Image (tube, rainbow, N blue to C red; front, side):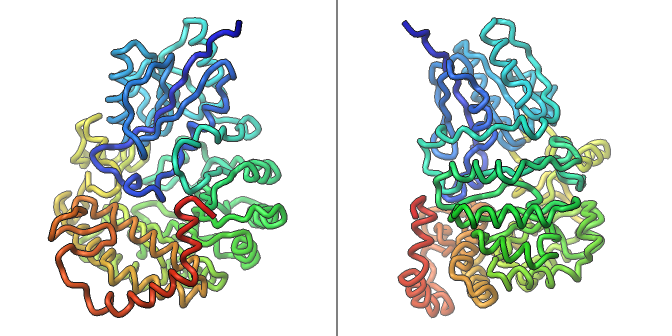
Length: 494
């Protein structure tokens, strides 16, 4: 008679204060780290995933429950952990917040895993089975050959439209506001291209997100490596539309752009952050300072030439920012050539140089931890600037967002994307992306009553503008002739 399997429940908690990307199924991304934990768990354990992007976690019998959490989700993880602990279930938590705020997490969770988990998770399982599990395991930095393929079967119960994959870890940039270097180290650890391609062939969703912070790194041979990856995707007929994240050096080499487009790259997130040297110095965005702000438009034009749209990542509320600076950055978003806009409020995440400096200076207003972590989602000001209070920054951002994400503006940007890229897929993707970001930043205005915003970012009860009425028939034609295929992809079908 076979021994009964133990049960591991893996939970992706979602901040109930602000839903963010989980507002829409097309932006609810599979928790990749939990797929790695599942892959490292032995066969004598049954593994189940609960993703609160799709369903609230309630108590289920289990031997162990594991959480991962970004900082904004940490209070929700603690809340759920308390529920399971009360029922006698052992709780474990890892991920970025557990690595940056280890002492705090230890107070709320039975076992904390800091750093990367690959080297210690098998020991966590063995120690639990032997009844001697510890309260803290430090994983450190994982050798690249010890990173397993993600166990993707755990994602089957949810309608994710993207497969996610990571091709390297580590970042030498050390930007002031970012904790990636602290978590994953300052050196690029690159998975072999053939290994990445092998894992890609195990994926089955129509869209792909390459999660690396720098798709083309800054080391020797980086461009050749990127070209080999993209050529390999073409040769193996991976056949996905994909997007990734990159620094400004993504546009340096036309051959990189050519093969990226051939392999299915339709949208690329560029870490622009700001359009002035002063603001870039605030953020210690050294690569952009070296390139110079004058390089932005040249880079964007080169990317467009290959039919790829640009999602510009912009930060508002740098330490030197004034109200005028925020509106200037808004105008940059409108007229720089970027196609979709990720507009974040500067947030001092724990573990970053920014956090330690502002904490020591007493400048963080929302600092009642862990309760206030729920505000650290980049759409709510937790600090002010040298020219604005926190409240003034928040109010100014409301005005900025109302202009950037109003229906007329994002539709105009979509038509510009189509003109610049000559790519209907790219135009559809940025149109949807701007809608999604608009729904995120204006979440508190969404509703079903007159005076609310609907999910199409139109005011309920108000007459549509002449521009929207005039262009609606054009979009109807786009949907009928071209966009219907993209709609199917974003619904999780080919």
